[in-house]
Amino acid sequence: MSKEKLRISLDGCNGKVTLKGLLVYHNWHFGESYDKLGQQLQKDEWIKQNIKNQEHYDSVSSMLIDWQLYEGGWFINSYTNRHLYNYLCQLGRNYRPESLSYLK
Image 1: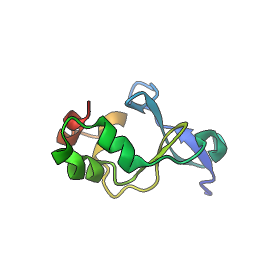
Image 2 (image 1 turned 135 degrees about the vertical axis):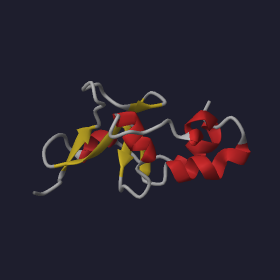
Image 3 (image 1 turned 120 degrees about the horizontal axis):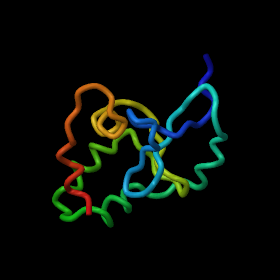
Image 4 (image 1 turned 180 degrees about the horizontal axis):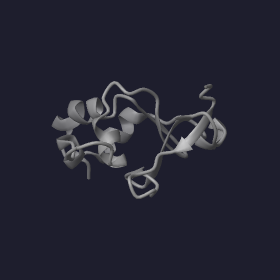
């Protein structure tokens, strides 16, 4: 099965998953073109502008290690740290990542 398309992440109730108002996408074997994402943005700058305290930068950056920021939303590039993705998608028995509370 080839994973050549983009799919919106869905939660356990079939709702669209977002982080800070931006849709979350992942690879899938059918769906939309990657062009929908638009230009890649600077995730590091986004983190700096959206955390309550700069001392939590490393923690939030680690939480988003697999996430890439684009004009059209977030793209899950890999699954090194699945905690946030699993929490937002309501997969398994997950708890809210502590680092999520560091965002404004």
